[in-house]
Image 1 (spheres, rainbow, N blue to C red):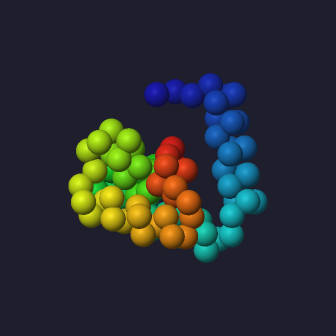
Image 2: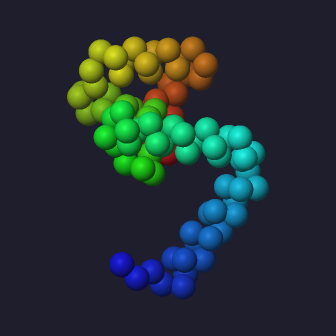
Length: 87
């Protein structure tokens, strides 16, 4: 797939915004989250565990552990898994 100059510039701008918005520690934690999404849940490398499970809950395909995990995360942020959709 070949991207246009505009598409590449949009990606570069997003990368720059992410680096400016998040600390190195937060970006590292996000990368670890995405790594475990691939290893444990066989999910996309571009998606967090919360987003992956959130999509499964919306589709009615989440198992009991995934539902419990989202309930646990709900203690720290209301509707965390739903809010993280697309991350």
